[in-house]
Image 1: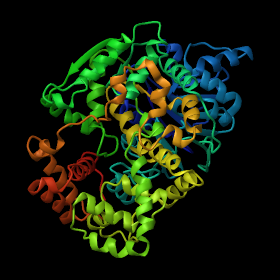
Image 2: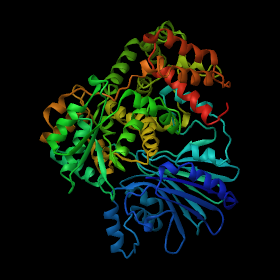
Image 3: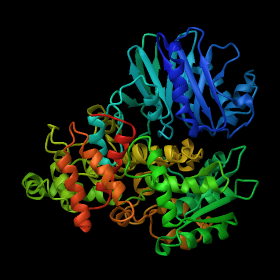
Image 4: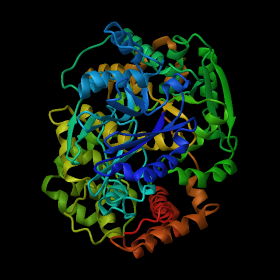
Length: 622
C-alpha cells in the first residue's frame, strides 16, 4: 500500500517541486521510502511513497522501470494472484529482479497493455508511462478499493492518491465544488465523479484512462458483473472463499485480522487458520465503558473455537476523544463516517501489525443490510399510492420538518419510484426538500438525486434487467461501499500506514458470489443464510445467530457535551462560507439538534460540522 502522484503534459518537468510537495503530503501512506521519476522527454514526472509489505528490499522500490526504460510504473495496492502471473511470465522468458507484485504488474502491462487489467485479482490504483508512445495509462481496481484523483491545470494532467496532495501541488484552485457538496449532503459522502474540490474528479472503479501528450483523454471500463447466473454448492463456495483468504495472507510483514465475532470476520478467521502455516493473529477493540456495545465475548468465543492468537485492546471514551482531532484531520474528503475505522486502525497499528484483514463486503454480497428488505417494500408502496404520491409528499414535505421518517417518506413519494431512486432514498442523509433548504440556489426538480447526470446513467445501466435484490446488492457495492466505506477505510487506515485487505472482494470469490441467483445469496428472511450454510461447522453456532451490530460510539452525547464547542465552530464555519450554502438553514439544523436532540439524528448536524471543518482546514472557498 502506498501513495502515488504525477504530472503529465508539456512542461511537466518544470513542476518537479510541485510533485515533491504532492509526495510529501502523502508521507503517511508510505513511511518506508520514496522515489521520483522524470521522463527523458520531460513530459512526465511521477512520485511514489512506499509502504513495504511484499519484498522489503530496494529491488521492489518505485517508481519501477522496465529494463529498456520504456515503461515507468507507480502503483498503490496489492495483487493477490501475482505468484501465478509471475510463473506464467517466467515460462515465457520474462526476467525478474525482485519478489514483488509490482514488477509482475509492470511486466504484464508492458507486454499486454490495458488488456492485462482484467487479469489482476487485486486492489490497486496505478499509473504507467510509456516513453515510446508518450502516453500515460491510469487505472483502478474492480471495486474501487484504492483511490485515484485527476485534475487539469492548463495543458497539464495531475493525479494523486489523495485530494490533499493535489491541493498541495499549488497547481489547482482551492475552490469547493457545489455539485460535490450537494452529493455529500444527500448521502454523507462525496459521489463520483464529483469531489469536494472544483475541477478534481475521481477515476471510476474497474476503468482505465489513457492520456496522450496533448492531454486528450480516453476512458474505458474493463470489467462489469455478468448477467448470467451459475450455481455453486456450499462446499464449493467455502473452498473458493478459503482460497481467497489464503491469497490475502501473502505478506513479508505481520498480518492480523480484526475480529468482531460476527459472521464476516469470523469466517475470515476460520478460513485463515486453515490456510496459514503460522498461528493467526486476531484482535478485538473493547470498550470498557460500554459493555452493552462490546463484542468481546463473541470474538473471544470465535478465537477459542479457531484457536487463534487473540488479543483485546481496550479503548476508553477519553481515548477516542483524544484521537478525534487526528481522525478529522485524516479525512481526505469530508464524510459522516470513518471515525470508527481510524480508531480500529490505530489500535491495530499499536499492536505491531502492518497489514489487517477486514470483513467489509460481506453485507453487500450476502444481503446483510435492511435495504434488501426495505427497497422492495418502498417500490410496492409507491405503486400502490400511484397518483396520490405527489399530494402526499407535499403534505409531509415541509422543509422545516426534520423528523427523520417523515422527511424520508416525503422523499420517497417525490422520487420516480423505480429500483434506483428507491434505493437512493433509502440511503439518504438529508432529503431533497431539506437540501433545498440548505442550498436554496439549486434550481432542481421536486426530487434531487444528488448524483451527476452521467453517474445516474451509469448506475441505471448497471441495474438494468436485474432482479430487485440483485440490483440492490450491486447498488450497495457501488454507491455505499464504493463511495463511502472503501474510501473512508483507505484514508483512515493509511493515516496509520496500515494496509487494509478485503477478502470478500477477492476477484474470484466476488465473481462466483455475484453469479449466484440473488434469492439464493440474499434471502429475504435470513440475511447471509447461504454464506452461513457454506461455512458450516467452521463457525460456532452462537456466532451465526447473533443479530448484526455496528461499531457504535456515543456521538449524540459527545456533540452535546465534550465536543460541543468544536462542533459549533465547524457549524459556524460552514454557515459563514457563503456561496450556495444558506447559513441560516445550517444554524437551524444545529439549533434543532441542540435544543431538541431527540428530534434529529446526530448524523445530520455532524455532517455539516465535518463539512465546515474540512472547508476551513483546507482553505477552500465557495
